[in-house]
Length: 194
Image (tube, rainbow, N blue to C red; front, side):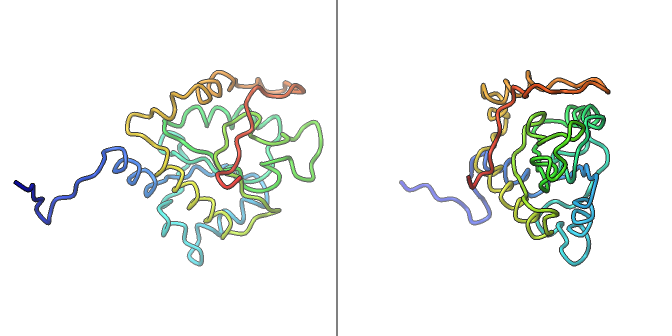
């Protein structure tokens, strides 16, 4: 006896379905501080239209976002604000470091500029450039969507891994005015292509 499935019925894994929904409905939280912010705005404008790729609406409330895009340099005085916004975002959440300044400090090798946000936040994708073009950010979003589809689970098991728990414990809000000269205990996360 052969089991037949009607044409209007689809059978799939629940994790796959949840990941498909997550990857196609990313809500970015822009944290734009410099010239990379201009390219981020161009990405959302009509010529490039990031909405075609599932990142429809830029929200400015962290509780409504699941993707933080840090575009531009981050100074030490801004770091507590950045970390607080990150902690207010609900899981599952992802982070894109856009531009040389956000990724490594860029040309600003000084005590007051954060030399890579990955020392203080878990970064999922890096977008190189000074500033990177909108097409590069769109490619990073597409790569992140592939990562979400591959690795995500419905109940968030990927966020219960020892590495992710270590990142949560290591993420401490730096009081305003404190100069951080020690390396962060956060591991450096690499791009999915590395």
